Length: 401
Ligand SMILES: *[C@@H]1O[C@H](CO)[C@@H](O)[C@H](O)[C@H]1NC(C)=O
Ligand SMILES: *[C@@H]1O[C@H](CO)[C@@H](O)[C@H](O)[C@H]1NC(C)=O
Ligand SMILES: *[C@@H]1O[C@H](CO)[C@@H](O)[C@H](O)[C@H]1NC(C)=O
Ligand SMILES: *[C@@H]1O[C@H](CO)[C@@H](O)[C@H](O)[C@H]1NC(C)=O
Ligand SMILES: *[C@@H]1O[C@H](CO)[C@@H](O)[C@H](O)[C@H]1NC(C)=O
Ligand SMILES: *[C@@H]1O[C@H](CO)[C@@H](O)[C@H](O)[C@H]1NC(C)=O
Ligand SMILES: *[C@@H]1O[C@H](CO)[C@@H](O)[C@H](O)[C@H]1NC(C)=O
Ligand SMILES: *[C@@H]1O[C@H](CO)[C@@H](O)[C@H](O)[C@H]1NC(C)=O
Ligand SMILES: *[C@@H]1O[C@H](CO)[C@@H](O)[C@H](O)[C@H]1NC(C)=O
Ligand SMILES: *[C@@H]1O[C@H](CO)[C@@H](O)[C@H](O)[C@H]1NC(C)=O
Ligand SMILES: CC(=O)N[C@H]1CO[C@H](CO)[C@@H](O)[C@@H]1O
Image (tube, rainbow, N blue to C red; front, side, top):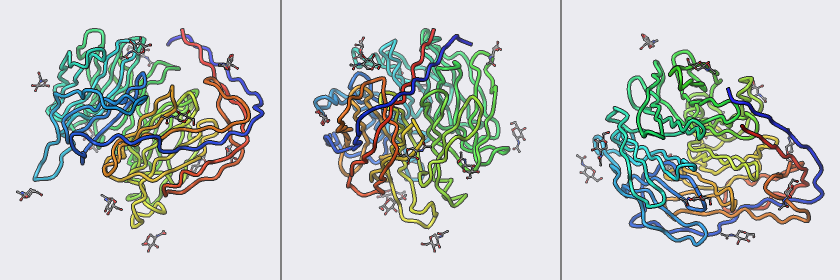
């Protein structure tokens, strides 16, 4: 275990923060509007989106809203019995390794493509040994360890890759799991966690802690009635757990959760938000973004489709804003933590970039974040009404060695 120190600073902020997302730009689809995309991410102001329909990773400069040359060389959208089969399509999940300037992308043939971001070229093709997709990633920069899920194998497994050697170093099998969703790296304790939608023992899902040294599952945190998909670490060891549409279909409710991974306890329920796939965290503003693209009105399986992007304040685990998206491509969400832009692919529109505007009589900077004391939640619609609230300051400072 690595040494760490965590320091919380509470203070008073004398301003009124007005949080509001507006559409800043829409990047039209090229060469054509996709019907199947997967994950996205932003690095150094450049947006990367896995697009199966066009067999490419889109590369967009968010400062100019201009497409840069896409990365090609992926399997593309595959079909079984004339229906899109995402288990053998790619590109799928992706992650940037900032200290290596590399992008790892899962493909539909079980391979992981390594892209040198300075040239935009695929420099390695690592086989996970599966003929089905290599999917979602997490990364530990200190040990240069990548983990990637192979969710469609029987049993599903996680592949461990040494990023220094670009070689597979092992795998961890998940017996009796229905699949695997997002893995995440916990920088506080140096462990990886995997979102497991459902197992025989925990039908509502679990978060599995894995030990990449012993190549085993070291701890299981059962979830109640969630069937999770995307997860993301926020402040301290808080983990946002996005529950899927199966929660609504199987349990007749919609609520996602925030866990304290140190204790395994649920510290907050985010009511009304399910049908989530990708989740991301913005440490600059202490906000989670959840792509609730398969949300259904009223958490009712007969409810109308209510696809939303949900913004949750990580300072007090409160839903602060939602806006309407779609139930096709909007399961992907990425945040530019330097410029506070959020990008969501909308099939009928393009890659829609939302801008966080803050009207404030005080000052906010990168180490501060408002703690709301009142809120107005806009439910759906394209209104993007501002949520006004008096702000306090909650700053978390982590020192890693
Ligand atoms: C986002 O909003 C800020 C503040 O209103 C503005 O300065 C900035 O130019 C906007 N960015 C984009 C990409 O529209
Ligand atoms: C597959 O789908 C296409 C387009 O929807 C249709 O034209 C074709 O007949 C279908 N083929 C089969 C075997 O169902
Ligand atoms: C990203 O930014 C860092 C810091 O400025 C720089 O060292 C790195 O080369 C950049 N990488 C890419 C792919 O732009
Ligand atoms: C990448 O590896 C896969 C095996 O995982 C193989 O099927 C595929 O042909 C390779 N692609 C390239 C471009 O080498
Ligand atoms: C992980 O496994 C290694 C090797 O078996 C062991 O030394 C270490 O204590 C384990 N870590 C945790 C947190 O269980
Ligand atoms: C979350 O909701 C569950 C019921 O679904 C309840 O048992 C639990 O106490 C709630 N936890 C918190 C922290 O509100
Ligand atoms: C769910 O929706 C259906 C159809 O609108 C309605 O009949 C039913 O009462 C709803 N169930 C609940 C628990 O609200
Ligand atoms: C997606 O939303 C559209 C528009 O509301 C609806 O017609 C369609 O049935 C939905 N598809 C799924 C798979 O829920
Ligand atoms: C941001 O806040 C920190 C902590 O209060 C302070 O040290 C720093 O100078 C501030 N930076 C700016 C640009 O205001
Ligand atoms: C979080 O902030 C909201 C909005 O200001 C407020 O209504 C709520 O009481 C706060 N909740 C907690 C647990 O601090
Ligand atoms: C209930 C059930 O299916 N249990 C299985 C879990 O996985 C182990 C290992 O593959 C099987 O032996 C069990 O039968």
